[in-house]
Image (cartoon, rainbow, N blue to C red; front, side, top):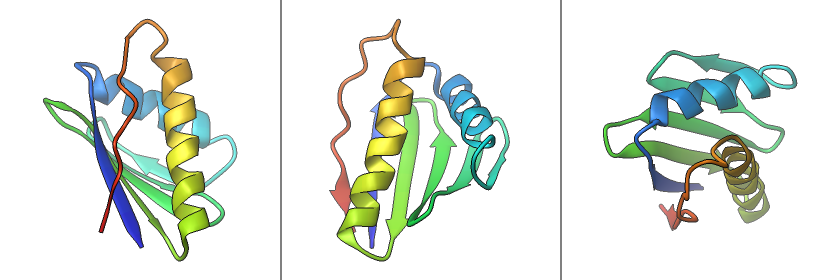
Length: 94
C-alpha cells in the first residue's frame, strides 16, 4: 500500500534534511539535499524536495502502517516548521 502528498513550502530541502538528521538517531535513513528514504518499523517514507514543496510517499503492508508513517512525518514536520503556517497534508492512496 502507498499514500502520497505534497506539502507546499519554499523550504522543502531544509525540512527534508532536518527530518532525516532527526530520524537517523533512531532508524535507517539515507538522504541528500533533494531525496530521502527512511525506514520506520512498519513503513517507509520516500521524500523529494521540489520547487513546489516536499513530496512524501509512505509505503506499508497495511493501513495501520500507512497511518503511522503519515503521522510520524507530519508531526515532526509541524514541529520543525513552526514558523511556517503549513497546511495539513491531504494524503492520496494508491
